Length: 110
Image (cartoon, rainbow, N blue to C red; front, side, top):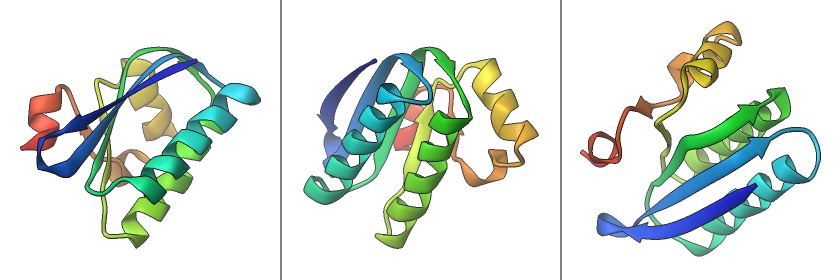
């Protein structure tokens, strides 16, 4: 899994995630990345999932866990470009209402 971090206007952060997020190192890497952003950066975080080939329940679990952590710090964690499969996983797990999701970065920043 590859994560590209970029600073956005308004002191926000974009994380472009590529590859697979599943039980094991990739989910741990995502968690460590989100933890660093939470500790070191300010503002809201957009997680661009356009290049995610696969995500399992562990990956979804990490996103849910950090959604709560960001909320505790009065910050938002939003998903950008989630695939239909990711949206369906969130719906099936009844998590879709919790996650702000956007089709594009411009909409997420508005």
